[in-house]
Amino acid sequence: MSMKRLLLVSTWFQIIWLLAVIGNDNLQWLTLSLVIITIVISYLYAGFSLLKPAFVVLLGIILDYLNLSVGLFEFGATSFPLWLVGLWGIFVWYAFYLQPILTRYPLYLVSLVGGVGGALSYIAGANLGAVTFGLPLPYMIAILFMQWFAVVYVIMKVLGHENRDTHSNVFGVDE
Image (spheres, one colour):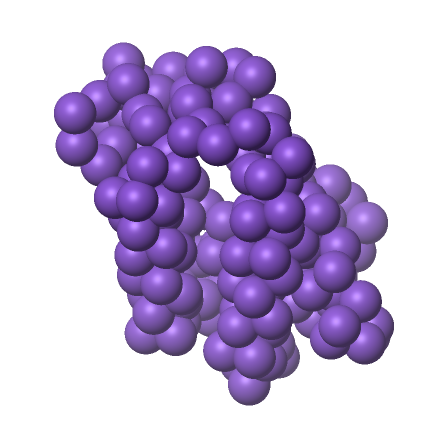
């Protein structure tokens, strides 16, 4: 992947992340719509398969639902927020583009960095008011790190068999 394309994909991921976390319930339909449009365009033009990523999105939703159910998370909404579903969708989309780069590194190292990054994203979400933690921060950091270490490991395993030869010009940027 070219540096331009990586920058474009990363920026789009961050825009959706911010929209979801800052706009949460108020902008959740916009977030979800943009995620669906992104995935459809990537499916049509960049070889983004739907079955394996859907499995990972479902896994992430189940994980966060369990975290909510046991009191580790509390969201402003009375039910599981749709913007969080959108976040899982855009995260798996982003992982699809990062996976060819990340396979150059040992899986444990990628999972370690992913564990830190995933935990930090939830801490950032908490600082922006999107989620409240049910335990003190040091415990939440440890729990989120372990969960995200496992999530990244599973994502790399699930997406690791995708054919990257079909990646083309989804954003109009030549590789």
